[in-house]
Image 1 (cartoon, rainbow, N blue to C red):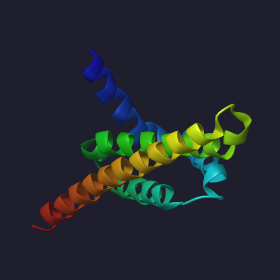
Image 2: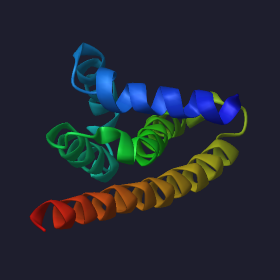
Image 3: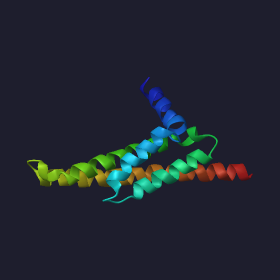
Image 4: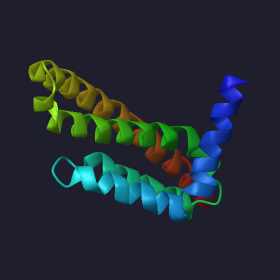
Length: 129
């Protein structure tokens, strides 16, 4: 059941939510945190979104797009925690945790983006044949 539910939610994100008001609201939410930091994952997310909207079958890359989206959200949340570390009794600990989590989100988000690009290239090559 768990794996099936993930697939359903991934496809819903990639097909119904992405191009509508929910996708635009998500993008605005993330933009607010990125203004002060590195916007690379957001740029990758936007490019992946555009690729998925151009393709007639976004479900092929739905899992990787959901993975990229989740790492973008985690990056956003850890950026916020890092910015407010001084409010914690041990701010250095929060900064260390945030730094590690941001690095992990960047690496895994970039990997998901790479899978999306690879799938898009394969789909384009098949369409050209």
